[in-house]
Image (tube, rainbow, N blue to C red):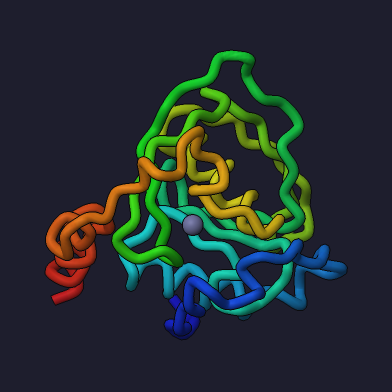
Amino acid sequence: MQGNRLPLISADHPTLRKAAAKVADPAQVRDLAEDLLVTMKAEGGVGLAAPQVGRSVRLFVTGTGEQRVFINPEIIRASKELIWWEEGCLSLPRLNGEVERPKEVTVRATGLDGKRFEVTADQLYGRVLQHEIDHLDGILFPDRMADVSKVRTLTEEEWDSRFEKKKLHDEEM
Ligand SMILES: [Zn+2]
């Protein structure tokens, strides 16, 4: 794959806290989307949003369920049923917390080909979609926690295994 690994911006960077701008033309974010896919894989993540690399545009990529590029995504349906899931974030190293969100969502977005598509997902994929869309609105997972004091700090080993950095590294060799 083409694309470059980009540095993640730090947790206190203001870009992580503001609403990102709509993408006018999918062709303009082709390179950025490829860079996000490369960066997500290198970091061992299951999703990565453009603001996490300092680009305030409505674009994210996923690596679970399927590897896919979402431009200008919106949640058009969410299940009434809520579930708890443990979330972490590449932008908040070693932090981890339980967040309650809809079990299943349907997201409508535009692909790099300019065509609109819809994805309905639950489990991890459904969770990733919601987490990444939050990034486009400046929301980080602790904001969604019922009790933010319950944020846990993982050991480095736990964090690395969570994001499968070592595993990915081995696969590359
Ligand atoms: Zn995140």
